[in-house]
Amino acid sequence: MKCDWVRQNILFYVYNELEDDARYEVEQHLARCPECATELKATRKFHATLSETVAEPTPNLLAASRMRLQEALETTRQGGFWQRLVLEPATWLRQVRMSPALAAVIFIVGFGGGIGATYNFLASGHTGEVAVANRPDTPPLESSAIAGIRSVTQEPGSNQVSIKYDTVSTQEAQGSLNDQRIQQLLLFAARNNYNSGVRMDSVDVLTQAPNNTNVREALMYALQNDTNPGVRLKALDGLSGFVQQDPQVRDGILRSLIGDTNSGVRMQALRLVEPMKTDSNVRSVLTRLAQTDQNPSIRSQARTMLAQMPEMD
Amino acid sequence: MPADSYAIAIPVGGNSRPSRAVEDSGNQNPITMRGSLAAQGNRIDDTSLIREAQQGNRAAFEVLVRHYDQSVLRLALHLTGSESDAQDVYQEAFLKAYKNLGSFRFECSFYTWIYRIVTNLCLDHLRKRNVRKEEAPVGVDSSGEEFNRLEQFADARSGANPERDLMRRELGRKIGAALSGLTPRERMVFELKHYHGLKLRTVGEMLNTTEETAKNTLFRATQKLRGALSEMR
Image 1 (cartoon, rainbow over the protein chains, first blue to last red):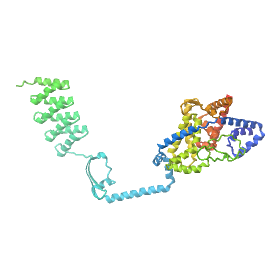
Image 2: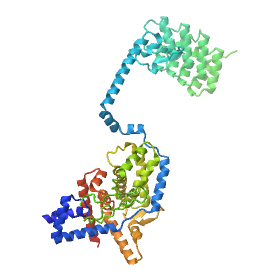
Image 3: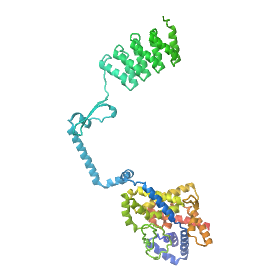
Image 4: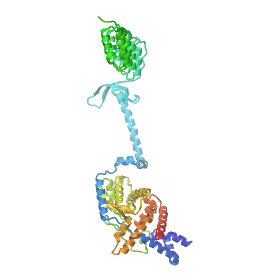
């Protein structure tokens, strides 16, 4: 039993890792147990054998390593305060936890700041336009809600700035098509709205009141400039009743007959000008279409229309 | 015999070789203590150096490096078996220490801290090598030539006797093969205890484990080594 214990501890005896009392017991046992003494001898021999082949780094290797390190250190930066703060949140959190005074200071500063800000708001509440942005009850401005900045002026000798800007907020207007305000909105929508669906709807509504010259202009504008072929088609529909009586409308349709990129729109325009094919302008456009249009069915349609035309004197 | 019978007085920098302050008082331990880091006396000096280095003084850091770098290089060379790998570990360890010096909070000694970095890098290296299943005793020196590092160890001590030289080479090869049979952790504990003469308590601290675990690991490692070496004879 004792021998087992000693043999398990001989290694630590040799390595000088035994407590004083254990060391004493081992030594006492070794003095009277030849077998364990032999084991000690074997352990020491093993120990000595392993210690025989010891490598030492050569001075050259050490010098080379030092030089290489020095070079690298010149271009290396120590982790700064911010890096430590970011990389070791546990460390700084522990510091905060360990510093109730710091926590109290942060709390008081925050509280004081809050009171100061409220006071500022109350004090500046009567200054008009400037205070608007500071009011807590005014929702923060979203950049999409700002339609444009009209003017920026700074009051001399102060940090107060007054800004006039347009906001875009959703409002609803209801009224008949004859209502001037409604017409105005529709005309605006037909020209300016980025949403082609809205332009389509407004053009659609406007076609119901084509007699109004403003409306007709808006439809002409849509026909010439709208990026959406559906909207252009809709505008053509609205203008269809004026091809014969309004030469401006006729010219507009002829322009899109030549220039419109969409063959559907050109086809529709062709149909609209058919009753007017005797008009010299219409005829020259038809001649051109018959020769040069990219769409074969438009070319053949134009040729047919020209063929049906009575000979001119 | 008290546990710390080696009262160490390592001179700062240079060829730091611990000397026995207490001449053999019953301790028959033949451990080589070359390059041992058990340098308690250095800790006071180090504290001011560390503080200066933490404030960005690179010269202070370089002095600090010289207190430890021989031992670090020696450990890296033993464990990697290659001069170039040892150099890489050395470089990476001290750069890492430099970058993270700000987070050193004196909760352990600096040498434990730096050794923790080195041992982790070496353990990574050993694990990678185990995956690659390379032949352990064959290394690559800085000029790119392969060498048997254990033969080279023998070369360093070889005398005029060629027969003895041959036996040493053979022994070195056997020891190398036996060491390569250990797990990376066993290898590390054995290295730190046997070749660096560190206390098992310190070894445990460096490897983030307990003294008891380090003790068991050392026991297992020596059993394996003895078995392997006796088989070869």
